[in-house]
Image 1 (cartoon, rainbow, N blue to C red):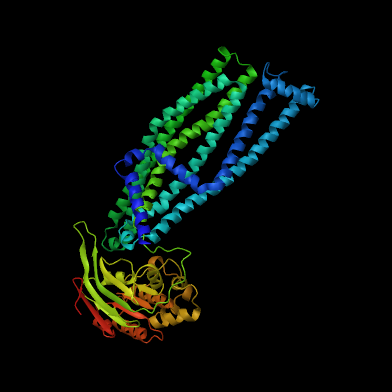
Image 2 (cartoon, rainbow, N blue to C red):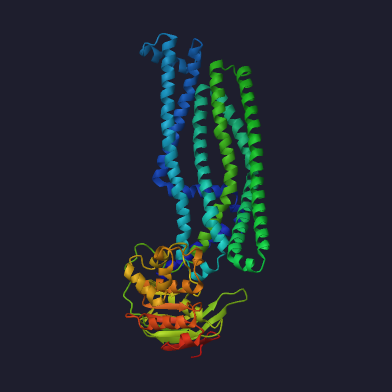
Length: 604
């Protein structure tokens, strides 16, 4: 198993070196990025993508038929058919077969045929749009859920080191830009197919004129590639500015209470205003860029149309009805050609977001945990819960080299024991707990549960029987009931109130308007710090864990209240192993065993 994981990581590392290494600039060319994006979307689309493409082709084919029908319609309306045209011979036989002798009969037939073709085209166009929109929505959702899944599969120390603003931007703004890129890709596919169908229609009417028209459009489109790099640069600037706005926003709300209490909020607001001004400037830069390209495209289209009309009349002697049909087709071709040109430029602006997400996913995949969660895992193994640290070392990676956080730690904690952990700040208390729950792996030595190393299936089984309460517990922006049931959705009303009574939270919950259905605010800001901690411990108890970890989880509760809470925990009918990090002597007095950490070593 480890060999397979190692091989996959080595392969991923080579891919990252190849993709984002020395030649990353070359591979970052907008055309190459767009090609990778299109390939990813095609693989995702699968059979539904084939169905959508078939609808696109059928719709474009019907448009070509409609455009070709315009020529005989014009000719019949002025009293004849294009002399020498194959259309004349084909329609002549059809009119004879249907006994359509008069001009009115023939016009009526052609108009009905044109109407039927156009109605079929509209129906197919609607089907096409529904199929492609469904693919677009599911592809964007897959990108977002893919990032979330990668986070769930990544080692904790890597996740903890990521910038929140970067992650927030990728999951929100950049994923939305991928949605925009997917929409643009849809437009590009439709435009390409329409151009091919329209060219074939023009070729049917006059091969020389069709080739001339195609050459002129291709020349104009090739010229637009010169500005793709500029569009990509603008897109990268927008991504950087979005990241700055997200980072400023997170810092604004995170430090707003501190800033207001010290009359420093003006500085925060100024930073936010500056970041938003920069973002608006980047967006306006791209808007002006697109407006300029649209003007250039319009001038080019008018020039090409005039040139083709002059050549058709004066050099190629094209029949007037045919020439009108060709000009109509040309006008129709200019639409998708302009769309394709604009799509290329907008894709170049949007695809830096796609590349940023690919980079993050590769970064997270390279740090994947050995036991990432999957839907088809077997039921948890039964675990008694005897814990043993056997000569465990752990060091955090730092720019100046690894810094030991725990050294040669050996200790045994029997199941059901109430253990206190104390020591000065930085002594290794939180590191000990992180190792106990398997968030990080020892640099040396082993953590064992019931004599089995804490990895693989044992780690998964162990985590399903742990409740962890931090010093600053996280409460969701929801009701008290929903926050408590998050730990155990199957818990009944009796279990909820039993846990609340154990933590001493039942009185204030009953006093709140709405009781269990009262809202707690963002991160629990509508209640006090002590009340948040009581609710968090109640939530942990509802889980019915075999290991309860209290990481300074009672320091906001008054001494008497904390003493009563700890007393109730010791008298639980089915008491789990309790590991409590604390500094108060009153908190530690009831512990059956006390571990003292100093400089990463057990001192007692």
